[in-house]
Amino acid sequence: MTETERIAAVLTQRYGHVQTDTEYVQPAAPLKVIDCVLSLNRHYDRFVVPRVKQFAANRPDVREVGHLRELITQYPTPLDFSIAELNYNDAPRAETLLGVIDYLIDIQLEMEGRDEAERLAYWAKWARPGDYFSVGVRG
Image 1 (tube, rainbow, N blue to C red):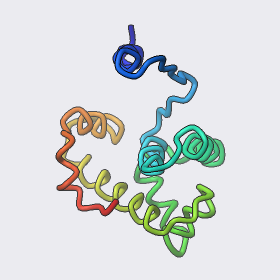
Image 2: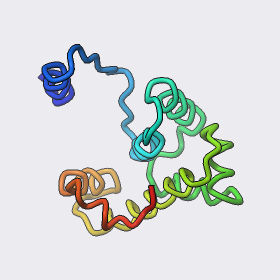
Image 3: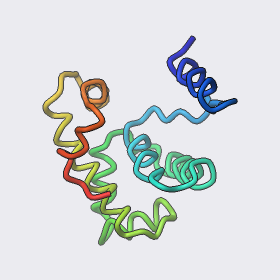
Image 4: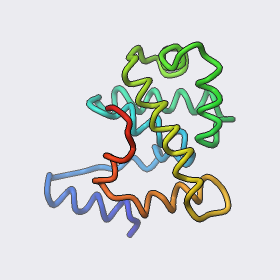
């Protein structure tokens, strides 16, 4: 049983039937970050998934969080990036995305691993829910 299936089993016990979308697994860290930030108070399947899938299709070259940061800086503002690349017109959420990206770029440099993906995976295992206070990103 995979970790996803174990989580689904626990959720099913607690909330009833839960179906996992095994085709919607984002392997690249930038896609995970976009997914996470966009999912705050938004309908996941109708709002988040289509935007992340479209971004992944349009920007297959964005494979690291640093690449995503570089792409955002090509726009006049984070909001301009969000509108053009994510079809999302929300300035505070665009600033949150940039803040999370900057935090992850910095924190992963303190972690073990050969590359950004390994360092971020190490950080994700190390991090605790209460750590969000130290991130210093609004939203």
